[in-house]
Image (tube, rainbow, N blue to C red):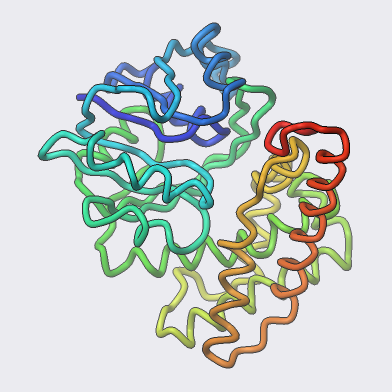
Length: 309
């Protein structure tokens, strides 16, 4: 079986490395981040986890390079890159191949098209350097797609389950509520997930953002897969205390963030449905202001925005 991983960030490196080390499939990674593609080509993926430090040898190419057609494509790019993947996804799949998204935020499945299925993962990973990832929190992965996909994850050592397509929306909104509470706050405060629990004002905002997201989901007729969004976001922050959120990682390396597809998506849906979401609105705007300020600093230094740190 051939599996293509779209993306070279923390989560893609985590899953690709474990897939490669377990020998469950032939792996190739496609990405746009030059430093990561080159590091993986040169050194493989370095993964730090409960088994120690290991090196997984994985093929890596730039996203527009020719690549063998895949039985399965796993999309782990940032939400703002999804349209770019969608333009090439059909050509990357075998006639009977399929894809699924384990991305953050809303709108990814709609962009990827009819051969893509939704998925949600609660694994935690931090990118130490290009091609070097630390596994810092285990969690369940749910896939509303071909049964063979979940089996591959299980064979690679992950806790993975198939879920019915009608349950996928609940899982996606469930993770969205957690991301709304954690990601933007860690990015704005420059702290790891667990630090939010130690800061009273941050913990309160974290809970409120998750609760607002749950209210929007209910207005859409979606029930979250847990009863108490405030308790769920606290537990996730505790379980992934040492993890650096993807949004903080993006901020630190001067990359665009996914806030538009997370807090921004909730703000837009809240406005459409008449549900007040002041915390998500404020977090969304604050992250955009921070990113724009970084862009100006990078421009002043005559550096490419994507790689300015």
